[in-house]
Length: 149
Ligand code: SF4
Image: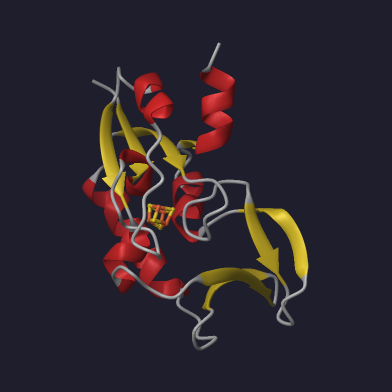
């Protein structure tokens, strides 16, 4: 069975920053021929509930910056992501929650250091690792729209 890595909140896990979920039954039905391997870098690294974060471009690098204390909290997310794909080498498809600073594939808001919005096509730090590994990667809402007849 093919394996898909999926943001755990889309499966109904209450791992969002506010302890809610993003359960998406239609998406799960579309993936019923896959074995689903869930991930949530933010819950693993920072617990739930937790402060929000934003993607901020600094010296041409996109970082995750905590909205609680403006700390750069990118490294734990990237370490989790690399470890996830080492432990799950047979992932063929990656679907991340759209607009998430960790899981968005091409839909994250990216700000400059003064918090001006630069664009809304940013890649979250977990998704970046999937893309760097050459794994087919989709924002959840784009995958759903493209595969719903
Ligand atoms: S980090 Fe990703 S999986 Fe976790 S709650 Fe946010 S969008 Fe969902």
